Picture 1: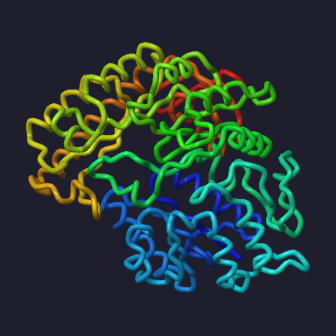
Picture 2: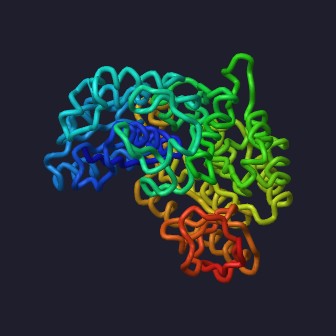
Picture 3: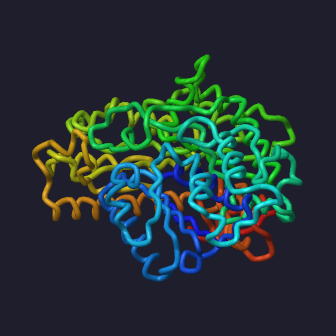
Length: 467
């Protein structure tokens, strides 16, 4: 059977999609393009109305280009609007976020083995494999980070032999380069208990749930044995990591445990995904500044620089706090990339509010921006607010914010010319990404997933200095 996984949205969705692909590969399926796949899994986002629209357009396009495909839709849009999603062409199953760990068992129960010749070992039927795969999962609504079972229901080795050529009845497994991935995205937390007035995600992802520290460490060993050299740590509200565990833990405890991994993993790099500003503690900044195990890269969603807008959004910090935090990071990590998210056109946003945002962004040490034009999300507080901003004004403010973001990125890349960095090769080996998130072209001759030393020669090119 040929499958394709299409992923929208955040790193948590990316991590979930890796889990789908591991299961499908272990069951003997083969990756392919959407227009030639028997099964297409669409992992959706619902952070904006445009995200929903993008998912609908993609599903319709897949159904048009590949009428024989059976489409499974999951993710936040599928969770918030299951009937709407289920009415789209060729969609034969809608899987809410909480059921993601059981996606392949569900498909087995639906007769997936008859769809496209999934290889089942002798004397193992679909229901047995489905049960084994379900046992791989823990943490309702998320992936297990502990010892797994392979596609035949056998204990999964944590050595490199599991990740070789994929010979045998149980199929292959994820390794660097499979499905176009060089770094591995590891979801260590899901769910959110914050009450931001515009956000639908707490309703689609549920309450916070964390993976225990020892299970995260075992998963890192597993993916390192597979050949991965970089792991991005992801969570819906990553900064809340560990608060739900017994006994309670914290993100800094997890990061320190990862920093202390044995010397055999000394070439391993961790990248911390998006952190809410109030969760980026001095201890975390200190660790990022002093450890070579963590990329000098942070992403801190600002959302707005107007006090009134931050209060209306129910964001638990002030612009003064955010600016002080970012300035401190820039002082401690002079070459770090510092990204952020902003929302334009929130209900009640005046021209003066937007000018406050623009003025801060222009003078800030941020290096890149994600700009979100506001759109009502179902059942959120903001959707009931008055003072809705006219669409033309939202589009113009979004255009200007993106223009500021491009200027920040250009300024950062220009400032990095002449500096040298360790970088990981991507694609065919002629592209490399540095710890501070610069992607540069390098001369051919390297394979994917190699550490190299590069000197930034221009905004988009690097010179090889050696390993």
